[in-house]
Length: 185
Image (tube, rainbow, N blue to C red; front, side, top):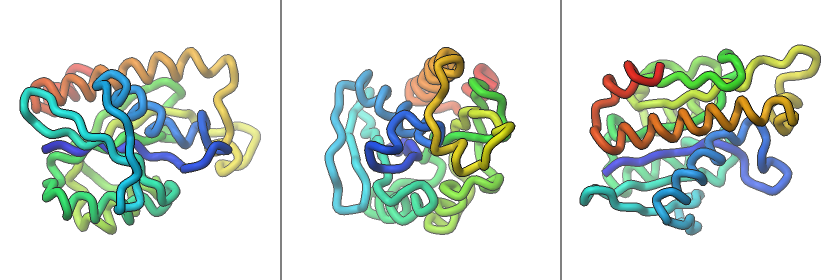
């Protein structure tokens, strides 16, 4: 079983914001897999898909970004998901807008959602798809990440979304994340 988590904030006011790129990408993946999200008892929306006989859980924590681990940890325990089978999709301020970077494991790198997952899972050996949103030039980080993409930024994000989805689908198809990293990094 694999678990793919898209990070973001719940609520209409956060839809289409830079901080919600994980939600947007996992929504697109759910659409491609023809599954819909249901509210679960684990403070998350969950969609279940099957590919080549393997169960795939798509997850959008309903805890707000900085407390994402509160949903992810219990879901992993309940479904007995190994950290090696967890992939988290999230925004990254330190990458240029539209750049996608895959990572096998590691620290939170300053991302509070990842920090929360590491804390609740007790392990940092899980896969990540980091989507660059760039660093703000003339506004606070909070205002920037909670702001929507400008019309000029949308095309770059759309390209990143296509790349991120292709990388996730490649991992689902062949289970060799190192090969996927070599192809998409």
